[in-house]
Amino acid sequence: YQKSIQILSNMLRDQNRTNFVIVCIAEYLSVMESQRLVHDLELHGIANTHIVVNQLVRGAPTGPDIKEIAGAIAPLDEDVRLRLAKCVRLMTAREKIQTKYLSTLRTAEDLKNVSIVPMPLMPTEVTGVDKLKPFSQLLLEGYDEADLGFGCGLEEGEEAGELFPAVEETFQT
Image (cartoon, rainbow, N blue to C red; front, side, top):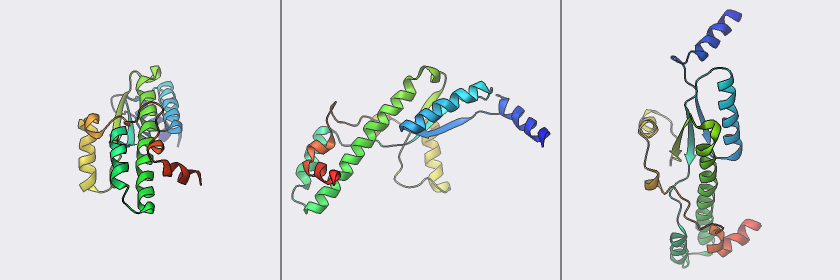
């Protein structure tokens, strides 16, 4: 048993054979744990060159888009309007939060030698070869974050709920 553990330990520390890639999501706990893991791997001599930040929401409507959406959905049934408004609010809020934590990773001094690889939230689960191939292509080649609407589009201090007042009331109940 000890011999097997020693072989595994040597293999993990062999930086010509092994590189540990951390995968996280852009939320507080995951980002903090990833930073701690980078430190622990370094402490034990295990190579880590990349952190993949998965499931990033991109392309949230901007302030002007939100106003246009609000106008476009005004004639709809109130229930439908509220559900659509909640979707818009959720998307913009998640993108704003994720942008903050992605920035935390990108600017962390202790991660200056680690590549941060952002990956967008996909519309379906990435399972099976047919979905894994295009996802791996994004992973290897990257993608243009501008094409996916990298910023959340809200002005500083502006909340999507302010543009959809009825949503505020719904979220408080």
